[in-house]
Image 1 (spheres, rainbow, N blue to C red):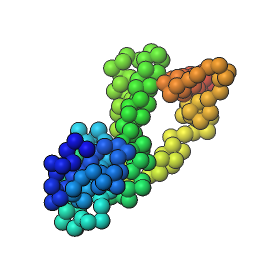
Image 2: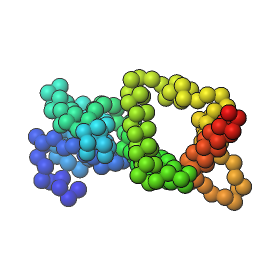
Image 3: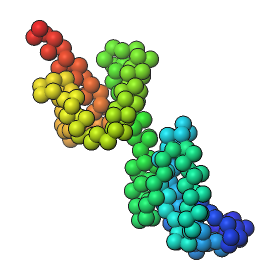
Length: 196
């Protein structure tokens, strides 16, 4: 609202404001050349995922210009605006969710006796390698099944991730659940080793 009068009708406005619709922007700005964009923080290392929604007044050339800007920091997908809040939740907030999971794995690794440096190296490289496998088009469920042997360590570790049961008075977060998963996998590895 503060800058609405300063933007002429021939200008293009690119908004990265979460939850602010093109209709809202259109009602407050002279220009109708509006783009709603949701980038994510991996753009800092040119591995970002940006989703854009454009008003219908854009020419193909205008679309290409906006797309090129964001392609310089990663992948770009164009979707109807009705999906932008879901995009914000999945790819906008997603890096924080993945980071929390990796953080939980590092902390659980330390609890299992690894040094923090080793736990970090293992967790981060596992995340990178898994992402690379998923980039091949492999469904996540197939990758999970490839790693999981019946009665093995992965199956034991997946148990707490699928279903965590505690007394109702106990509130658990992701870190507790990941720690339990790694502990179960470690315990199963020890059990398997005893049988040899």
